[in-house]
Image (cartoon, rainbow over all chains, first blue to last red; front, side, top):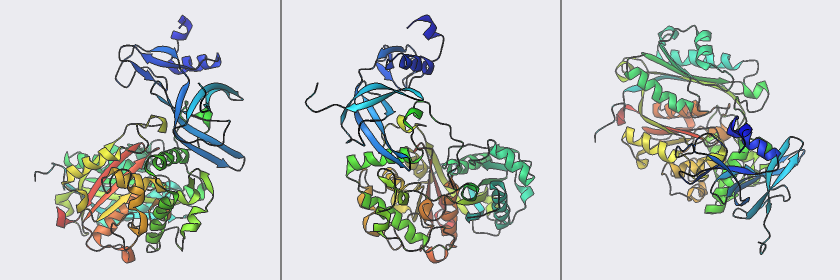
Length: 125
Length: 384
């Protein structure tokens, strides 16, 4: 991480990486913990947090479809393979099965970039 | 059995509600004021006797300041702990601590909301979570729907079982003239209601009503000198691990699995001792989760437990006998209405819905998105 990045808090660092097209999460070498969402201390109390590129693969932990007059969109909780959970969406499908394998990509929306997920086709790498 | 030193040390001596359902033309504080005045009268005390104030609302940033000013009080002790709808179960514990420590002598716990007539939507001061906003969750329902999806996938819980929760609540509401949603309701109606956040429909959601409630708590020795039948504080406990549903460790197990045993241990009671179980039913899944987490049925069995009218009038276990947040009242923060119903049942004042021999009641409050869990145990003189 460059000096400029260190001058701001973890939320801003995460958002700057995202704006650069990079999905980064925190890792504490002293405890081996991964952390999401970004913060200044891990659940075990470690503060030696570094930024690593997320592998991007994960599993659908829970999912719902919000239905409104103007349309429907799914909201999912994804368990990343690093062992952390995040809220996200699978915009390419109406819904998905819990336990489905997914792969992250960064989608640019009117409100800015966000990490979303696509189903990994069975048999694909 | 050695008892916790807070068990039975305080008692609710006055309880009232106001504006339950629709109260057009009244502000949240006006309804709260009506409930407070009625609760004090119920206790046989004067407003000026109150020297401890405990309050939370969804529309006052500084609830105790607003209450104190509105009611003309000068309390020696005040606490505005806001853990959502579970605030009032925690206030019972806080008030008991303050009373027992001699920091105050007459405690008021109060709440008021006019969210139905003010706009018909859930009013909340809850701030968005930055790591969620890009995905446009519609909290609270999105969070509860996520938990429901997980419970279904993991334990085979069905929409029909969720509907059984809604039908049981309506069954009780039909025995309660104060309940806002009364009248026949069929399983087909519940299942065919408008889907809002899969798998939860409008019929799986609590009401949006107006309503206020207030109770007066004093030390047990003083309670015996007052005119009403005291309802004793026997125990309470809270547990909380998360704010955002993202950070809930396991969406099928709430922190009620800790708050419940904590409260029951303080009260020296077990599940089989309970005559009444009041569970914060913001959504139908709540009742199932809390039945499991409070140990009233095994984990994963909540859906099957509620089948066949087991928690409906005439069933094996009396749950949410006022009709619950689903069919009686839900002004945004419902926790104090759990206590109001427990008090009515223990006093024997519950009319057509009165359960026989109600001496011991559990009130379980839920706040946020399955976040704060606070359990309180109340009882009659017979179980002291």
